Length: 386
Image 1 (cartoon, helix red, strand yellow):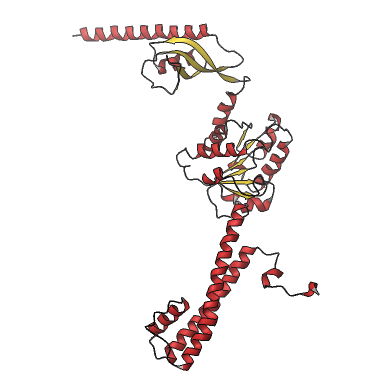
Image 2: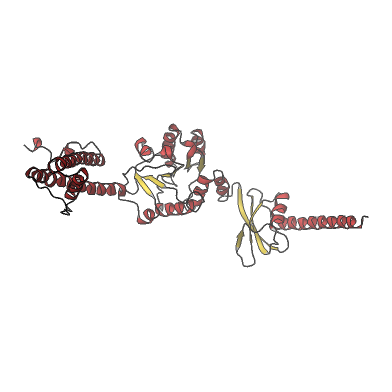
């Protein structure tokens, strides 16, 4: 008996359709019926009550909105019956249903947004696929704050494609304007829902930065992005360096190691591809690393120091330590440097000693002194010429 019972509403028989589409379809149908009833009432008032067209529209609209100013009112029996049947029974009831459906749709939309199932109209945005196993919230917050401090990226939308937040994003991430879609990067429907084809950048994070097998999941996602010709916009994390060649073969633009404590490296690799190579080398002793040299600086300017170290094959000066033990990056080029040390990017396999650096600076001082002396004598000879 219950099996053959009719549904309470037609929507209950269409569970395979999205509820948002059903509500919108029903509201459109109600609006069409309401428009037909209002048009009928306007024609009745115009022909039966002897009102002008504008007056007929006016009395119809004030009636359906339940305002009822009283400046016009139906006087004939037919006009009054029409008002009762069409307006009070039909139009006002339909208007109430439309308002109810609108409120229902708003609640439905809010619930879908909260659970990450709402499909936004996105373009020129950043998609981050996967969530770090540990400290995901802090990573996303720092990533967003760093990316939005870069000119031309202040207002760029950031969308997370993850299954990590089924009940909604934490307030800290939502307040920063991040949105999410509940899905995985290896699902074609999820990539379509986040408009991956219209994204400016796609970031694929390693699901577990300590598990070599997470590269398998990353490779599956990368393969799907490559099939859609999106690899050239993709930056991904690779746990095992030996797998980098596989990702390069797919056309992935940038491949970096997972560095959870420094999302700034990921930000630089996204907005300035290639810079991540320099930054990665600073975190190991395999190729290059920043080295500190404690020595007195008092007369050379920054341009002279940089030139001296490069000319003698020592490395690249990154910063100096002033007399208050503060690290100064990007100092003025032609002002004399006074400090107690240097931070230099040197080769890890052949790190120069502090004596070698001191000798290079002393030799450059002698070179500058001879050069100034020769220029000074040349100027004197020019001044004595007739």
